[in-house]
Amino acid sequence: MAGGKRFGLVLGAGGTLGAAWTIGGLAAVEERIGRPLAEVDMIVGTSAGSIVAAALRHGFTPAELVAHQLGEGTEHLPGASEFESDSGRLPPTPRLRLGSARLLATAALAPHSVHPIVLASAFLPVGRSEHHTLRRYVATLVADDPTHWPERDTWIVAVDYECGRRAVFGRRGELPASLPDAVVASCSIPGWHQPTRIGDRRYVDGGVRSAASLDLLHDQGLDEIFVLAPMASRHTDRPVRPSWRAERAMRQAFAAQLDRERCKVERAGTPVTVVMPGPADLAAIGLNLMDGRRRAEVLRTAQVTVAAALRRDVPAAA
Image (cartoon, rainbow, N blue to C red; front, side, top):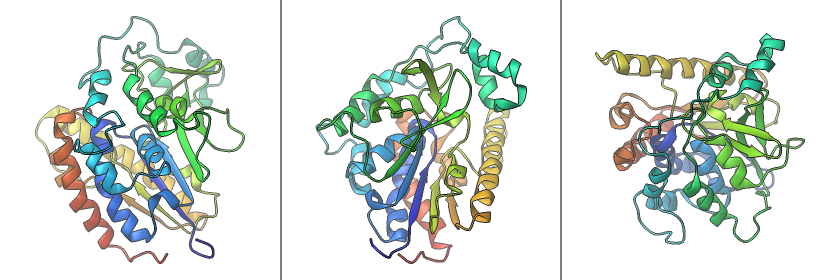
């Protein structure tokens, strides 16, 4: 849209249910922006968000993605439930082998060069799950030209499992990768999935470094950015079980990191609207983000809660 505002869309990590929550919120974001999400100027996708980003850039509307999540239409694509046949609700027994000895060596030589959570992921054993269905899904999107990358800026975030740096596939100057390789790499959870090899390097889930990687857009000159961050929560409930309390604390830690990233972007002059799951969403999601049995409930809840969250802000002018 010549002469209009330049929008960015950031879609964060969150597993099976994070994808459902994100998809449930897309229509409200599209209405707020006032143009099809496929046409926004920049999209950053991390892990589950990378799958949604790829689908949007290949012409899927929010309504079509909702239908796919609910098992309707899009017969040429693997169904949403088929993804669970690869990853399952719990990880398979991993291989008894250190995740990344090279990453540990990098950290030993340069202790401040590796983010602490990325470093911790190197100690996890190598996962066994492989993203066969996900690769087939993205390959189907780009079947007309497997080497083609979306024309509009689309950044897919993973982590280089050899040196620990954030890899941003699709960004100028980064290692070239096919879209299926980039998305699979972005979704490869350490200890759960096998790392994805691209060229001579291995990559794992971008969510290990940041739940959304909003800070990547601080110097892109955008007029406004919208973020859907299913792994972070600022306002949570107060569960009694220690495991649930630990999960809520983790979510609040991700929210604090995202707040720091938002401040960095807004100091550079770009306003940011961040939407995270609230208490109603958390009740629908439960403790296991990979439990696809809750997909429909999570999606339907997000359709209400994300729209309500956006209504509390001043509408964007397209």
